[in-house]
Amino acid sequence: TKLAEARTLELTDDNWQIIEELLPVLRSLKCATTALCGESEVLISMVYPVTATLLSKHLKLVPKESNKVTEFKTAVSESLRRCLEPAALHRTGKAALISSLLDPRHKHLKFIDAPVRMAVREKLDELLSNLLQNNDNIAGVGPHTSTLEVEAANSTVKKFRTECDKHIAMATLFGDDYYMEKASVQTELENYILEPCIPPDQDPLEWWRVNENCYRKLARLAKAYLCIPATSVPAERVFSAAGLIVNRLRSRLSLEHVGMLTFLNKNLTMFF
Image (tube, rainbow, N blue to C red):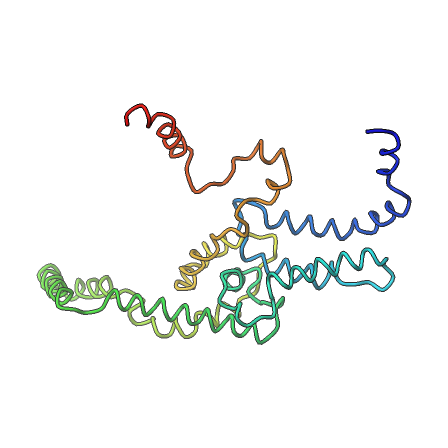
């Protein structure tokens, strides 16, 4: 670089002042990126809580800050609101909000407005009802099912003769869910919401492991939703050369299949 060009690239005192004022905002954005870019933690349930915290706390306009900082905060805030629409009712069925309700760290949903909060709970209640209905459909009685049930009943009668064995057979056949089903469907979500939230730094998967038997239907939904990643790839891989070198890129194909496809691509013309 020529000396004249280098001088034009030098930062002025005003530039350094702006950078210094932007540092707290950039630091909060870095923390948000770190919270959403892991591979082994529950991430999708963090999207809306992290966004709401940024908007309400770290990107909040301060009267004494410079115009540049105000412009930067405004641009980032508008971008987040436009992409995520935290106040939109049509977003209540999205996986990110359902996952937040299924995450014991964020199930209070304080980061969204009351109408959206109620709509998310209603959507989760609907998912629970659909889950129960699907189970009933799978266990529905048809001609073939009736035959199997008769055969199973006959074999059970032949095997268990005594009164004690009869109780064991009935308990094994029907299980606890047979008589607890309706009560659990009506109260499981309410009891779960009334549970105290755990700190943000604790593992929600460990909480579900301990409490799975208390909320069996919700646990099934939690397994389905909390495994979803927040981003397609960890964010540090997009901006970090070291991340590209050290970390293996996430792909839908395993290394074994990539090797086989590469081999076929290079050698297929030898045989055809």
